[in-house]
Every structure is written in structure tokens, then in C-alpha cells.
Length: 627
Ligand code: GCB
Image 1 (spheres, rainbow, N blue to C red):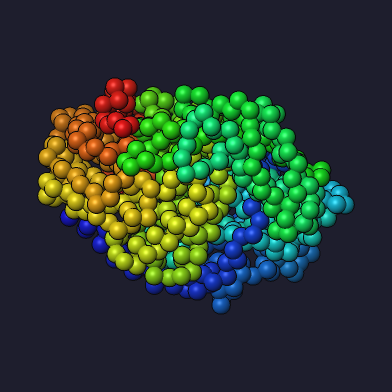
Image 2: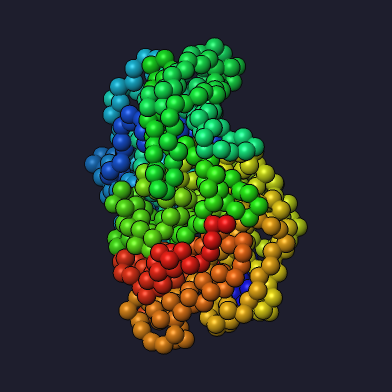
């Protein structure tokens, strides 16, 4: 890390300690109350659901948010959660708020880009919607929230039904006992306040978009229903494409008694099998498929998979493929691949704000296509499921990451538990997506024994939860001031693929310095240069060494690629970053104006010179070899 970066880091630490005092009360308030999430329905976007997207009434509460938290920090069930209405004409007023006449926000959507007074707001926003329902006997209804940042609390008709922590993974709250025929008041309080022991912690280089940022729906299912499943190509100790015909995995039927029947059908692969659940509601299977076409970027074949249990049926579109490492090679279906991609933040091109629509996703992928990418690192948190679906269909390989960014409270066991929950939620949602080949446990964490133990355990947990994918992390350091750069971070021992971030030519030294660097790694594993780049304002031109110009950004990337060509174990590159994105820490007027400008494209999708450098290198496959 350069001195500048080190200074940035310590400045951030300072600010953090200052804000720590401010947030201390809030930590006390929220820190211990979270319940681990039990239900998470997989494949909701492929189920028959009733969308609750659209207008929700909202009320804003600035910290300390006494409607949501009492003075001891406990969540209150009185107040706004009760959705009472003021008795305006006759008085006395029994309440002084009224959701029914309050303005509305669009769901899904961050609040910051919908109401200009909330642009920098971090605190609590209360959402309310009257939901008509006709519950039928023998059915259960869940409120599915694709993601809400960061803490969410849900009431139905005044009864609290669940809460969730984490801004980027889905949760499902059972409404069955609380809902009735007719209109039901659904109130969701979302708190985007940052705390030290959150994941991410208080400081990060992206915009803290608050609110219900992903789709919301009602999922109605029978008493026993399929909540989770995993259908994948058998992952044995060796792989041969000729023998790749065995599919294996499990189907889980929530609350089912042992012996409940479940059917798995994949008509195009000639699979039809009836299974029975064990005492945990789980039915494991291993079946042979006929004429299986494996998923790959060249042929992103997806199979229609139909799961049935009683009257519950789920269909999904799943690709089958094998990914593993062999020495320093990454093998997809037994063939060595070189990953050429870019880092992608979940920010909507042109209109700004969080990605919420198919159009946003298409726009992001269109920029990946322009640089000829076969890969993307979805940083720094799980993205909208639409991204994985799109990548599945179009054959882009993905890296998916939990929001464990730089410094978090590695010394606290409850923070570890939280990281495990986030990891499980990410894997559970996306384990059936062929495009996802890498799970990342973290980004740029300080190299010390406490963090190494934390992340080694987390990497092992990821591997245990999903032994069919590769585990990675983006490392930072060592110092690159010398020409000999030796990376010997012990965390690499726990990874299948090493991610290396560095910013030679931007945070450290000149672009040409990269030419002289000789990297060695203490492990013989595949390496992805997971971040490198420089800032440039679109349309700002000058010489190759004029900072903030498109020319300088392009120059940095050219020298980076030269450096990487000399490192035999490089198996992938993802420049930082596909598109300029909002960050509250980037405040140089006229150049940044609140944006991190390291994009290959501007936030309006305007192509910078750097994008052409990347496209050329990817088209010529000149950066590295697959083997
Ligand atoms: C990094 C971080 C990334 C930042 C980037 C930058 O190392 O991983 O989140 O946005 O650098 O631009 O400084």
C-alpha cells in the first residue's frame, strides 16, 4: 500500500473512532437483538408469486429513531409499527402520523435517489402498504424481500413477524398467523445506520443506498413446501467430460414429516425420480442424465428442472458444469480457462441508484460485452439475482462476494457468526447458478493473525457448504515499493484461487513502475489480479502522465497488463472498475463530484479510452494463458 493509501486508511480509522462514539448507543441498541434467519426460499423469482413492487407509503425517522427503538435500544412494537391513524377532526390526536396519506417511494428502489431530501440520509425509513389477501386453508404465505439495506423489521397488522440483518441477501417472513382476509397493513422499518460491528463496517468506498432495494413479493405455498434445493453435476476427485452425466444434490421440504414424497424431473436430460425426505425434510439424490450438454461461456445451456412435493411445484433453469483447479490452472469442464473481466458494482447505469430492473442488468452486461469479457467480479456484496440469471443465460462466469470489506471486527465471535449467516444466505440463493464459479469471503483485509484465523475459518465454512466451487478472497499488500514483490499472506493457504489487488500507477508510483515489478507468491495457486486501475473523468484529455485523464487511465492499464504477462500463474484479470460509481468519499469538485472515477465507462455508459485498451487485450488474449 502506498503512503497515500496508508494515510487514507488511517484517516478512515480516525474518522471511524470519532463516529464510533456516536454509534455506540446504536450498537447497544441493535447489536444483540438479531435472530439468525431460518427461512430463505430459493428460486422465488421462478415461483408463482404476487408482486408487492410498486408504491409504498413512507415516513422518515432520523437517529435516534425513537419510534423504532426505545431508550434501551430494544425494538418497539408500538408507534409507527401499529399503523394507526390520527383523529384529525375531533381530536385529541391519538397519533401524529398517517401512512395512508403519506407520500410514496417505489419498491424496489433506494430512497436516496427517489427523494432529494434523503440523498445522504442514513437512518430509519418506515414503509407501509395495505395488502389484500384471501388466505386459503392449508396454505402458508411468506413475505419475500429480495434485499433491504441494512436492518429490517417487519410487522403485519401490528404484529412483528421478523427481522433481518444484512443489506444484500433475501429474507422470507411468514405472514400466515398475522394476516387475515381483506386488507393487511404490512409495515417494514429499514435502518441504514452504519455500525462498527456490521458487515460491512462503518467505512467503505461505495454509496450507502438505503431502503428496500430489491423485489418484494408474497409467496403462497402449501403447509409443507420446497424451500431449498441443490441440483449439480457430481463433483468427484477427478473429472472427465465423457463421464459427466451424474447429477446429485438435495431437495428440502420445509416442515415435512419423514417419508414425504418429492419428485425431481429434468425432461430434456431424461431424469425423473421420486424421492422421500428424511427426518430433517431433506431428500438427497444421485441420478444419471442422458446426453448432458455442459454449461460453458461458449454454450450456456440451461435445463428446465421441475421439483414437486404434494401440490408445491418449483421450476428452475439450471446449467451443469464442473469447475476446479489443477495446480495453477482453473479448469471449466476439464478445460483450462483464462478469466477476462471487470469489477462490477450494483449501480444502475445512467439513472443511478441501485440496480433494480432487467434493463439495468442488460446495460451493465452490455458494457462487459463491449470489452469482450467472459467473467465479472460482482463486488463487494451479493448482487440482485437478475445478474446471476443473466450471466447464466449469456455465459459469463462470476465471482460473488460477501460484504466483508477491509476492516471489520475480526476479534468478535458474533461478527464471525454474522459473516457465516451472510455467506450461507449468498450460497443458498445462488448455488444453482452455473455462472457462479467463485465464492469470495472478503476484500482487502489487514494481514494479521486474528483476521487470518477468522477468514480461514470462513473459507473452510464456504468450502464445506459448497464443495463444488472455488473459494477466493481479494488480498491487499504486500508493499510494492520494491521491484521484488513477495506475497506470503497466510490466508492464501485457505483459498483455491488467490485474488490480488494493487494500484501501481495510481495510489503508488508511476504507471511504468509496473514494468519492473517481479511478483512471487508463496503458494502455487491460480491468481486473479482482482483490482488495479486509475481514475479518469470521461472527456478529460491530456498526456499519458496527466492524472485524471483518459490517457493516463489507459496508460496505467497498459503497464499493468505488461506486468501481468510476466507472472506465469495469472489466470484472470478484473480491472477496477467497469463503470464509475457513487461513493461519499470521492469529493474532488469537477473531477469526482461524489463518484469513484476508475470506471472503464462513465456512469452514463460513455466509453473511456481505457475500455479500448482492455477490449484489445481481451480480444487478442494477450494478458495471460489458461495454462
Ligand atoms: C480498493 C477497494 C475498492 C475501492 C478501490 C478504490 O482497493 O477494494 O472497493 O473502490 O480500491 O478505488 O480505491
